[in-house]
Image (cartoon, rainbow, N blue to C red):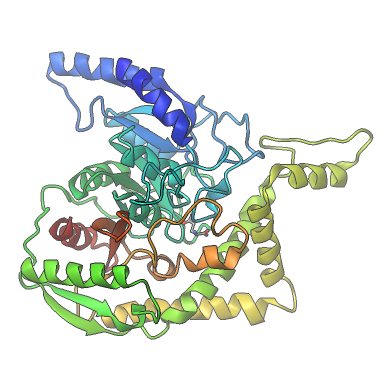
Length: 454
Ligand code: GLN
C-alpha cells in the first residue's frame, strides 16, 4: 500500500491510469502471503500489473478511453485478465490508451494524453508521446509504476509504444490470446499481449495470457508452449532475414544505425543474416487503413445509446435522434474519422474499389511473408521510423500519424507474432526499438532473437 501511494503522485503526472485499483493489488499481495505460507505459490502470485482499459474487468469501470463508455462497469471479466488473476496477479489500475485503441500517441484519449517519462537530452522539459495505443501501459512500465502491463496490438499498439519508451512487448500470433471481453476495434487484427521491462517477463506473462478459449471463435486450439523454459539467446543455425523494402529513403540515420547494430548482435549470437524481399510492403499501410476502419465502423455500431454507456436523449427526441446525439457526443474526432472512412469503403459502389482490393493486398502481404520464411527463421526490422515525437507534433495531420505505423502493420495484416525490444538510444538520448517478426506460432523464435538483442 505504501509503495502504491508513493507511486500515485508519479502516476498522476504521467496520466497513465484512468482508474486506480489499489485494493485489488493489495488483495493479491495478501493472497500471495497466504499461498507462500501454505506452500501453494502460483507463477505470478502477488505481481501487481496494470490493465489496459480495453479489457473488461468485473466491477471496475472499463472505458476504452472514450466518453461513450465512461461509467460502464462490466458484469463480466475478459478471458485474458481472468487468466492473470487466476495465476496470482493483482491489478494496480486501468491504464490510459488511445480512444478505442485508435492512435499512435495516446493523444486521442477522452481522459487526456499520457506523458512519456522520457525527455530529450537537450530538450528541457518538453513532453513526449509514450506511443499508442497502449501508451498508459508503456509509460507506466517505463516510469517503474508497475513491472508489467497488458496491451493490445491491432496495427502496432504494443510494439510502437514499447519502442518509444525503452521497454519490451510482444504481439503473439493472431488467435493465441482470447479476444473475449476486450473492447473490439478491428476483430481480424486485434491481439492481446504483454508489455514488460524485458523479454523474460514478456515470456512468463504471455504463457499465462495465451490459450484456447471456446468463447472466441478465432481462438487457436493449440497447447501453450513453455516459452520461458526454452528461452535461449544462442541463435546458431538460425537465419535472420533483413527485408530490403524496409530500408526507406530518407529515414533517420539513427534508426539505420540501430538496425545495423542489431544485425551485428544477432550475428554475434550465432545467426546467419540474409537479405529477403517483401515486395508488397508499400501497400500494407493503405490496406491497413482501409481494413481496420472498415471493421471498426461495424464493431462500433453497437454504441447506440441503448445498451452500453452513454445515452443522450434530447427532450422530445425519437430513436434516430438519440442515436445521432449519443454518437455525436460519445465519440472523439479520430473515432469519427475511422467510422466515416470505414462506412465509405464498405458502401455499395466503393466496396470493390477499396475493401475488396485491400483484402487482396492483405493476402499478397501474407504470401510475401510465407515466401520470405522459406529462407529465414525470423525477420529483423525497426519497430517505428522515429523515436518518440513531441505531444501535439502530429495531431493536426492524421496521415503523418498513420505513417508512424509503417513497419508495424505488415505483421498485423499477416497475423504473425512480432516483438519490440529496446535496442539503442538516439542522439537525443531517446530509446529506439527493434522489431522481430516470426513465423506463425513461433513466438519462441521471436523471444529468443529478442533475448539476443536486449
Ligand atoms: N496506430 C494504429 C492505429 O491507429 C494501431 C492501433 C492499434 O494497434 N490498436 O490504428
